[in-house]
Amino acid sequence: MCGIVGLHLREPELHPRLGELLTGMLGQVVERGPDSAGVAVYGDPRLSPPGTTTVSLLPRGAAAEEIATATQALLSQTVSFVDGGQTVVLSAAVADDELVDAVRRAAPDSLVIGHGADMAVLKGVGSPLALAASFDLASAQGWQGVAHTRMATESAVTPEGSHPFSVGSGQCLVHNGSFANHATIRRELRAEGVPFDSENDSEVGARFVAHHLAQGADLEKSLRLLCERFDGFYTLLVSTRDSFAVVRDAIACKPAIVAETPQWVAMASEYRALAGLPGVESARIFEPEPEVVYAWQR
Image 1 (tube, rainbow, N blue to C red):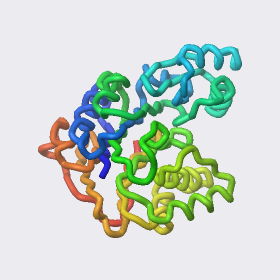
Image 2: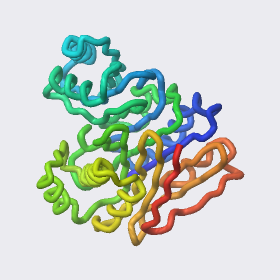
Image 3: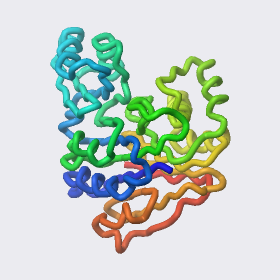
Image 4: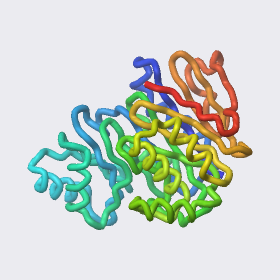
């Protein structure tokens, strides 16, 4: 199992309600994945201040303030931080790769779990709703959010194995299902120089998509290539700063439902996660077809 929810807001007047709506959606898929949970939020000025780039980090024992101070000394730039419990989010007005490099030098035992402009990733182990509270998700604003509750199958219950997997600038992937040939594709990607941070099969999918995006493919093409290469049962929700996309495998046995209105697009593993959204009674609601990439642009 595992639970996926995502919300792409077209109507700016709804942006202040992103966290409230996403928290309500997450609460309806808790029993699908009680092990751990995570979110990616796009456009929240508290988590990712305008004009900065952001790095999300599993600090592995180091204090948030200590990491921020050490990073600031390396950059000679102001570094702000949000302590999200098991995740720390740092921001500075420098280039994306410059901030990532400085954070890794300042906290070499910690793990970068996301980076980019306008995006923050927060994840951890434990009760999904308790984690959402520690992230202060209900207060989040922005134009897009993705959330996941995990029932571990392919790797241990660890913060590193939690979703979302964000391995390219501003990119994010959440997954329900399993990839049967992930070990083979992991070896192939490693041979091309792609690094890995966990044994989770979902990370292989995220690395595959990021690899093809970096080579110039757009998100739709990257997901079509994934469908050609990966075996298994899966529903994926993949987001970038400007895109929101859903795809299922050829059998499509993992649940997914999409609702679309002029104000928003939402996706979830179960309809009840959509039932509280404003205007859902007039939404176009459908189940994604197998191996069809559904993508929306900001």
